[in-house]
Image (cartoon, rainbow, N blue to C red; front, top):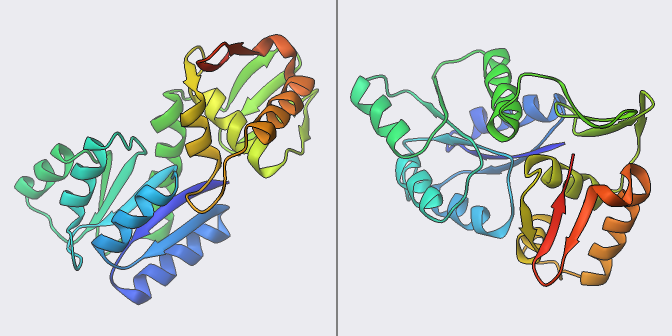
Length: 221
């Protein structure tokens, strides 16, 4: 399940979009002004940002520009009634990946959201990434497939596997894993992390998740 931050000050539109995306399998966190969105961005990790531009507090352009400067790399879509080329240019300069103008059709928004969720992290048009001969990762549904059967994972294991799939071949520092798996009001646990790693290794093979001493972990697809 993808986690989306929705910033929209129109309560009716916010509720409509949140309900529609939730019905289509996404976890939506709704906020109504720029400062509230700013707080949420530093409290948790998101897979995608859906941002209105003209909102109370800090506008969407300023919010995203600051987020990008703080190394928040989640893909972002601006929802706005602005339609000038200058506004479009300003939006992309602030770090957005796509734009949708009001009024819009919900199905179009869903297509844009799911396209970015797929390409924004994986940069691939294929539906699956092969881990080994009989094991695949479904990038659309964030599921582990073994012998063509979906394997049930715990919530944290699912988040961790997705992070590994997104960063294949890179050493992921312990601090980054902690920030990704645990929200600001949760206490990270090295013991729990080792358990999640152990559980994933049992499923996909011990050699796929390499422990790098004093640095972190590396996933090898």
